[in-house]
Image 1 (cartoon, rainbow, N blue to C red):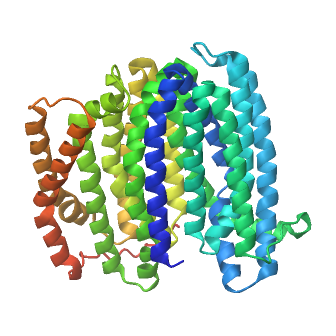
Image 2 (image 1 turned 135 degrees about the vertical axis):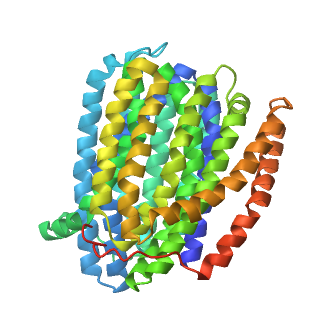
Image 3 (image 1 turned 180 degrees about the vertical axis):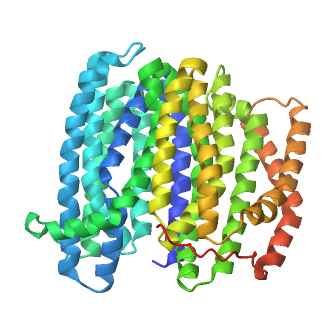
Length: 504
């Protein structure tokens, strides 16, 4: 598949998966109970820590498979695949040991409601097994990506998501228990990874996975590439998972449910925006390789402006109509979820533009310092979430995410990143961020006027308000788009940082 087709396939698959999750969340929550659903989310978040055991090898597999596949170097490709498979098999065994340990400490989880300890332990073990199988099978997913079968991999993921949704609707009606949910998720995981294996063999008929092909030298080569990638991914996992984990152990699964609703909406908004940075990554690498520094600075500034105005629009909409969305989607009595949503989205006002800078540096091959900044931010996030939980409850956990993200990104990461991409901070502010305030102010005015009309809750109202807001944002943003287009061939001033690339 072409690059454009692969990007399109990734976007379509991502949107479909968001839609599936959007409909599945309220159904599963209402079929089980808020407490049981909170337990499900909490256990899945704990299982998510297994992502730390990937050690950054996913990107390594894709990179080396792509390299050896293009040159038809089948022996080298098989060594990389076999070595990664062996490493992940060992990590899968460790996942099962950790799942067993989690079972031992599961009595520490407070407020389980009607759930029995035996049911919780069964779900932990089943989810651990599903995670272990997914870890081993990810090798074949990496092979499909490395051989440019991204669309096929995404199709398998979408098919699995649809099957999970169908089974959730049918099976939970017959037996509304957490173990039912876990079992059919395990079955779908097995089927998904079998399909990845079959299609990986079809993509590379010469593929062989054998213990004898795994070598220590190949492992060292892979780890030399994946080291700082693993640090960055570990930081991302800690930030993403720590909120739910802290709340689950400290306040119980019913509080997890309240927090997760705000968190889930925030993720549905930020994940598609993150794709902008992924599209920028290869272009940034190309411009950097050809020493087109002014073009790179201009591109980064324009993409940062785009992400800021989009996330700003969602933030304003959530302030005025986030409560209506939650009431229509989930039900009444979740005002705290809206407040959590607003805090998390406020953090994204900084995080999304900085993600553009982060992806640009990744394309340039600058990974060491960003990874260390990320892991420092993750540790601060965890510490503050625990401390503020004691004073402000679960909203304190959201502030524990907001505070380190905003201050570390603005005071530490942004100055460093601007130096690396030869972009002055003043230009980023005056030419990228400040012009966005005009359309955002227009949207704010629109929302203020509409909110005073006190329209009834419902999907029709939400769609109408969203459509009107989009039109207001577009009309007010037209001058900004015109200016950006006019300045497309007038690169931002570039500062000659002699130390660019000194610490990568």
